Image 1 (cartoon, rainbow, N blue to C red):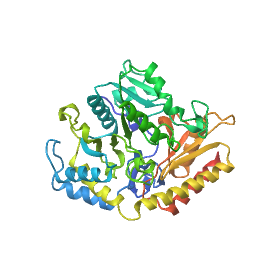
Image 2 (cartoon, rainbow, N blue to C red):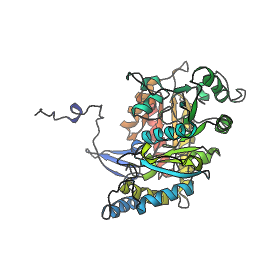
Image 3 (cartoon, helix red, strand yellow):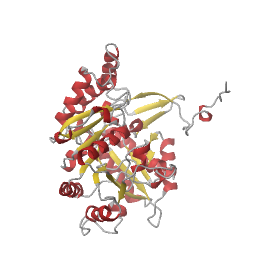
Image 4 (cartoon, rainbow, N blue to C red):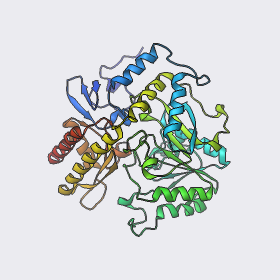
Length: 421
């Protein structure tokens, strides 16, 4: 038998942070030394209702005493209710639900497979910096070479194209004169960089790991029209943006665009339990269940948590609170931008915000972003740095139960951390 090191960081195959978290409640959590943190990343962007929401915990406890798990071949009350509710609250064209994934990566892969099956085509278009997932096929589609470089084989047919990143426009344009080149020039990539057989475009309406980029007005509408004209399936990855994160139930609602397919995960259970869904139009229902399914897909315990979460986020005032708290935080962070040139841009919707740090010449301030991230943690605020720690954007995604008063507290600490830098 191997001798086991006392320090878990010498056992883990991946890097661990210093803090040992032991308890959480709402937007706060505590480490084993009793130190309090404001969790501004909601765990892994999945604790939609914060740590230990009492109603969700009660639903999980009640379900655990009745039926923990049933394979996806069977109906259960919880999974049936989740599917019906997702159809009810999603864009009206999405009428079918595949609940057989347990995470975002496999949901996105399933959506791609459905698009390929439906169209008989193969290529997948992804924006630069787009994050499709961490499984081997999804990583091969991601919009950053770093995610593909370590592996000898990549998913064939991935076509990466410039995305709607106005702050650093690939085409060196501004929104008032660009003519939406980031949509129109996709035609060139199809003609010259693809196989000519394009099944789908998959993108996050607001990028997650890629820097919290919000598309300019009209972009998603034009992209939908582009896809419709070419019979390309448009997939919205709403794994981070779904269930109120942007201040609307889905980002699709905020932008007024109906995708052909939508993927959901993370916040679906409100609590950190794994569950994912693929929503499609009726025309894509001709699908053999054996083509996409996973052991823990449609987990009954997770479904019970999702039922309660979907009820809570639809209560009167819930989304209004997200918009109010998000407006406070966005306004305060933009106020800091006025006094600190290191902040090049502050952007976002609802409680999905990004703070981009820049060098004096406008370049990406990666080292400064990491220093800011550490300074924030030193002041009890948990954040993440974009592009899985290699970018220059501080990601701010607190639980949606954050109050305006707590938003002011977060902003105060952002200011203190800037002064410390």
